[in-house]
Image (cartoon, rainbow, N blue to C red):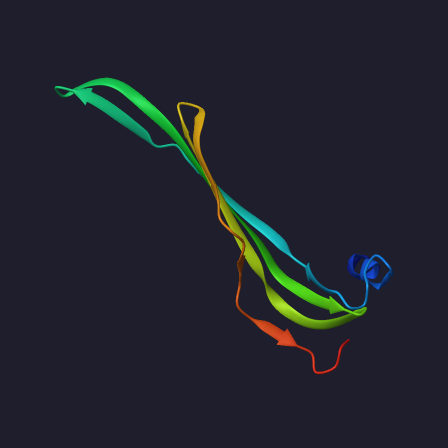
Amino acid sequence: MGQIYDAFRQYCKEPEHPPTTTYVVPLFKHSISSKHRPVIELRLRWRSRRKVSFEVEVSIAFEEVSVVIRNKRFMAVQTGAAQAKGTLKCEGTQILERKLAKIDLPGKTRSATAI
């Protein structure tokens, strides 16, 4: 049980974490990755001339639940955020990479009295 609270103990230390600052601390993190390797076959007069291979990789990282801490107390629990990125390679050479901005997932529960 002590390990659970160790992650929060640092927010009780001053002056590193002043009581006037609000911190959003993720509790759970998960990620999903997927790779696909499509091939395009180039043909001339119905004959196969060459195959061009691609690799598409997409990954999504989730921070599922976060705790809002202020003045050494838990003020709220909220859903986390998600962030996605992807790359495209052609014949082993990366030709495109995109990283989407972090998306905050909806939902928040506030405590009537801080814990």
